[in-house]
Amino acid sequence: MPTWILLTTLAPEGVQTIKNNPQRIREVNSEIEQLGATVKAQWATLGRFDFINVVEAPDEKTMARVSLELGSRGTAKYESLAAIPIDDFISAL
Image (cartoon, rainbow, N blue to C red):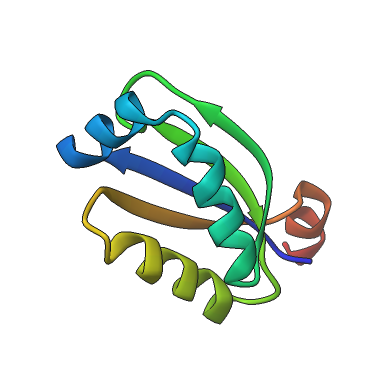
C-alpha cells in the first residue's frame, strides 16, 4: 500500500485543544482510519512541524480526503508527501 508522510503544524486553537485534551491526538488517528488510511508511526517534533506521521493510504484520492477533512477544521495545517521506497526509486532511474 502506498506510504505518505503527513506533516502537521498546529494552529493556536489546535495547541489549546492538545493542551486541554492530549488524547485528542489518538482520536485524530482513529478518524484518519475512518477515512480509509492508517497511521503506521507518529512523532511529535520540535521546529517547523508539530507532528510527523507515516500514513498508508490506498491512493492519492484517499490521502487528499484525509488532508482536506482534517484541514477543514482550522486547528492545524497539513502537508502530505508521497514516500517512495528507495529500491523503487532507484529502479525507476
